[in-house]
Image (cartoon, rainbow, N blue to C red; front, side):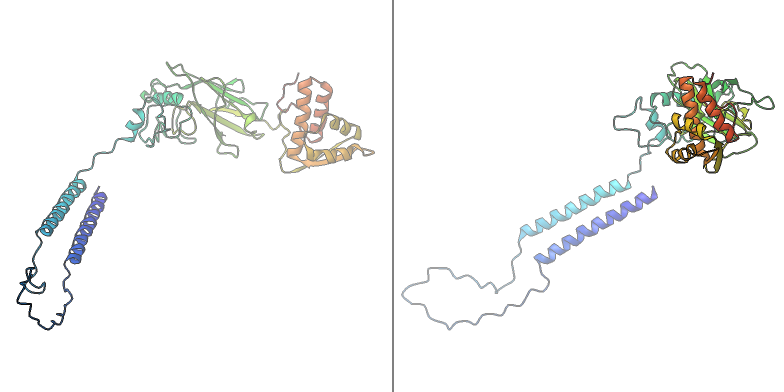
Amino acid sequence: MASSRRTGWVILAAVAGAVVAGSLTARRRRHPADPPTRLPEPSPLPTSPPLSEPSALPISPSPLSGPPTSDPSRALVRMAVWAGVVVVLCILTVVVTRPDEPAPRRFDALTALPHPPPSGPSPWPVTAPLPLAACQSLIAERPTLTYGICGDETAGFDRLHDAPSADPNDPRYAGAALPTGLSTDGRICVAGSERPVLDTVRPTLSASFTQTDGLRSIQSTFQITGVYGRTAEDLQLPGDSGDPLKATLELFRHGRLKHGESYRWRVRGTPPSIGAGGWSPWCEFTIPARTPDDLGLDDNRDYRATLTPAQWREVMKVGPGRMDAIGPIEAAAKATGPAPVTLEGRVWTDVVNALAWTASQNDDQAVWDLADLVSSALNGPSHVTMGHPRN
């Protein structure tokens, strides 16, 4: 406020100075301080008028004779100019010294709007936190406007791993949709020594939410981290779209976890852009050293598989799934004896995945056997699925 007052007085002084300077300049132009001296013209020789005819025109006094006469209209103009200056200065003084009006609270400015304004989101970011129930209702009404819509913090701080799970009896969560019915790839939520051992590196995580009147949809956030500490596979992701009142995360859409690791996960009923609490309890699970849906290969490391030329020809008939695998496999198919093929781990993963997908789509046991053969040659699972249904 003090800074704005100083700025106002500086503007007032500048305007007043400009007005006064302009007035003085105009006056100096009208009345020069030192007018140039005029020399009298030489008088002509006196001549006597004819005595017979008197002059018809009256004789006027010389302009150089006597003091200059003043114009009363000029004085009136100067008075009007100065009166205008005084009025302008008075108006500016009132404007500058008027006390500032309190700015509207940004929270009130947003929550007072029953619907998004036609021109877009409110220009005032919200800082005051909303209760979790009100936050979820507001997000359901404005699903595309979520960042900062509920305040910087909503019913708890958005800490990655140490925020406590929501207590349904906590008044902060009154009326909110809290996660329940947690499932880890079809298994109930368990923590501790009873955690399940899964047969996949791409489990599906899901939860339902407590019933809330008037709530049409839920946006969710899933967190995944290690049971014993952070891992390279830690994730914080929005739930996949589907049932509007359930939360699901299908990891086959987002990557795979690591063999031999134990993980934990949880979910809440707000999107990742919201700083919110309302977390579920942690659910734990373990990925074994080998699973049928993954070869367990390092993507960027080279691996060698050796088959007979006839077996490589069968792989070529089905299709290796990668253009960069065609050349080496075609060369091995023309060999006269068992032929090794060396490819990167990510390429082998795509080759076996193409075989498994074809076998699953066509329910073709011969192609399943071929996929098992290539997987075993890479020290992978002997009964591979790559995540595809297999009878």
